[in-house]
Image (cartoon, rainbow, N blue to C red; front, side, top):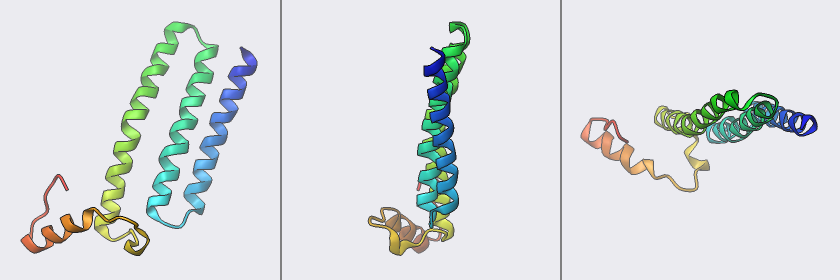
Length: 118
């Protein structure tokens, strides 16, 4: 059990470090958002599982709630940050394969108002 816990803890730490390196090395906002959410979330989950193996089951329930909260909030935060970056012009539109927000942005510009759900 100790070896499995150590492997999970070290793997989680490695994923977190790789995510941090990706945030420093990747060239644009969408790529950095990917590096900020995917490996960081997986790294945290591995760390939580490795920690849960070392604790009594009553404490592991709290760690499961932390994992659930992370899995629910990381994608939402990434979506909001990506949308804010797009609206402020921080995203290079020539690198996008599909631009679903362009029509929403153009409609907002024509009407002179910003819709809160877009």
